[in-house]
Amino acid sequence: MTSQSLFQLCRMGYLALTALLTGWFVQQGVNGTYTLLFSLLWVIPLLLPLKGIITGNPYTYAWASFILCLYLLHALTLLYVSETNLIFALIETLLICLLLVGFPFYARKRGRELGLGLKKKAKE
Image (cartoon, rainbow, N blue to C red; front, top):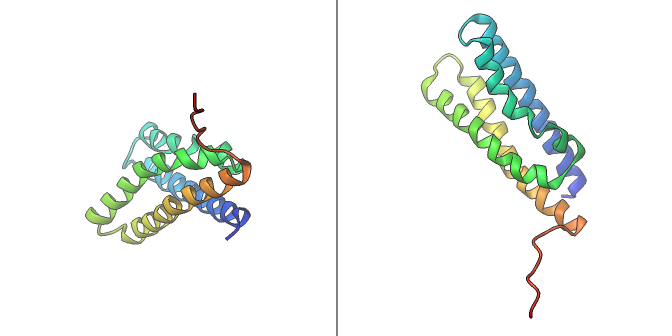
């Protein structure tokens, strides 16, 4: 798989996850389940890597996985405790798991193409 196709898949998955969770938390805020401030606090961390993910910055793809771990905990908890939102929790879990695999692969592949990596210590 080329880095361009990985980039497209990861970007589409991230935007789908962002739309899904934004819609979910806004709907929860409107219904009164959560306050709108609490819903906003759930959406903000997801928006932090947005610029780098859209532009294809491999460094952003590497650290964005850490943010996705927070949402994976939410998805797994919802999957475990919820009886009414089972389909939503399953979709959220699968999408995040796919992104947690795709993001590091893209970061590694694109980073190698750009010649990025850890610098080796010079011998003295």
